[in-house]
Image (tube, rainbow, N blue to C red; front, side, top):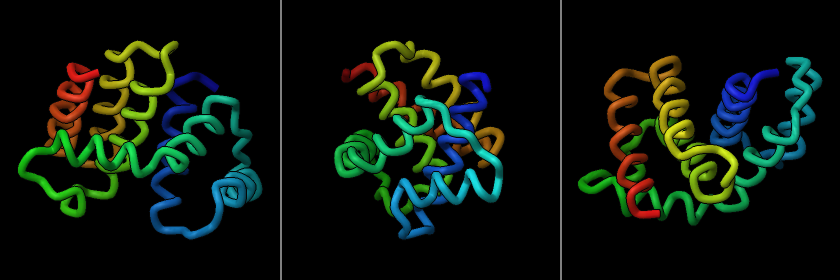
Length: 130
């Protein structure tokens, strides 16, 4: 599985968790059973990391989305932002520009062009502040 594919799988899991109160481990297990997902270390790290650091990630999103209440951000864009900000803050081996570009591509695929522009703007601001 390529890093891009792993990132997309991590995004799907993060998105699924928004609507599911099961534990991260249970969601991973269910994805393995139903979709045949064999999560690599990246997927496990990012998925569990996003939910371990959820309050911090949401605080960063709120701080950098001036004029927007986090509750008004689409669930898709919010999950993409959480994933990308987790990468930017906690995964030094991934270049910031790659995290931003991949987040924008995920938004283009799963959300709208407006969401992609919004995510790009927020992540650019976050990257400058880190």
